[in-house]
Image 1: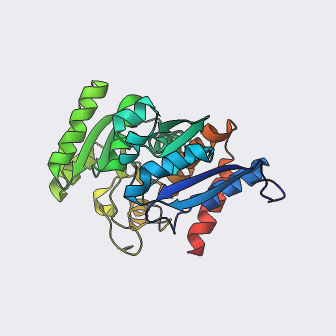
Image 2 (image 1 turned 30 degrees about the vertical axis):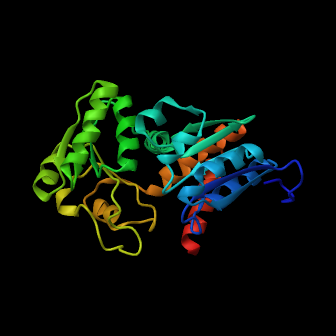
Amino acid sequence: MKSDELISGTTTICGVIGDPIAHTMSPSMHNAAFKACGLDYIYLPFRVKKDELGRAIAGMRALNIRGLNVTIPHKVAIRQFIDKLDDMAEKIGAVNTLVNENGIVSGYNTDAQGFLQALLERDIDPAGKTVSILGAGGAARAISFILAERGANLIILNRTPEKAGECAGRIAQYFGREARAMALNNQNLKAAIKETDILVNTTSLGMSPDVQQTPVTADLLQCGTVVFDTVYNPLQTRLLMEAEKAGAKTISGIDMLVWQGALAFEKWTGQQAPVDAMRTAAIKRLTER
C-alpha cells in the first residue's frame, strides 16, 4: 500500500480467492510488503464459491486486478479459466498465484519454489540429499516435484500408499528420478528416518486446535536431521518441539508461507520482496489470532 495509506484511482489491486477466506493471513503480509516498498498497491481477500470461479476470473480481467493468490478449494479447478500455465504448475497440477498482463492471466505455483527458498535461506541444498515426505496431497506434490527437479532422493509416505505411489509415478514420468512410495506406519517411518537427511511433514497433524498431535516423536529422530513442518499454526508445532529434543534442525511452516508470498509479490510488482517485513507481519497476525 502507498506510504500514506490512501487508495486512489491509480491504486493497483491484488488479492486472494478461496472459500473460506476469513482467516487468511495474506492481506496482512502483502499489505505490509507494499507499505515497506512504498508501492501504490492494496491486497484484499475475496470469498469465491466453486460455481463462481469462472466469473471471478472474468472479473479479474474486467477490473484489471493485477494479481491473485488462489487457496482452498480452487487450486486445481482454476486451471480451466486461465490463459497460460507455468511449466512447474502444470506438472504439479495446481496453481496458487495468478498474474494479469493486460487481460492475459497466467498461473504459477509458488508453493513449490517457496518451500525450496525456505531451505536455501538456511544454506540447506537438498540436491543429493534423502528427503522423506509425510503425506501425498497437494502440498506434498508441489514439494516433491521441486525437490526432484533439484536432485533430491525422495521417500514418500502416506496413510494411503496408492496416493504415494501415484506421486512417485509422476516424479518418474516428469523428472526421470525414482521415488520410493510407502505406507505411513511406524515400521516404515522408523526405517525411512534412519537414512533421512530432511524430513518434511505435509500432513495436518499438529495443526491448531489439535496441537498435541505429531507424526513423529523424538525417539525416532536423529541429531542433525533437518525437520521441516509445513504447518504454521501454531508457530512451534509439537513435531518441531520433538525435533529439538532430538537435536534436529527445525524449520517452521511460516517460512514456506512467507516465501511463497514473496515470490508472488515479485511476479506482481517486478521488485524484490521485503521478506523480513512479510515474516514480521505474518507472525504478528498469527499470534494475534
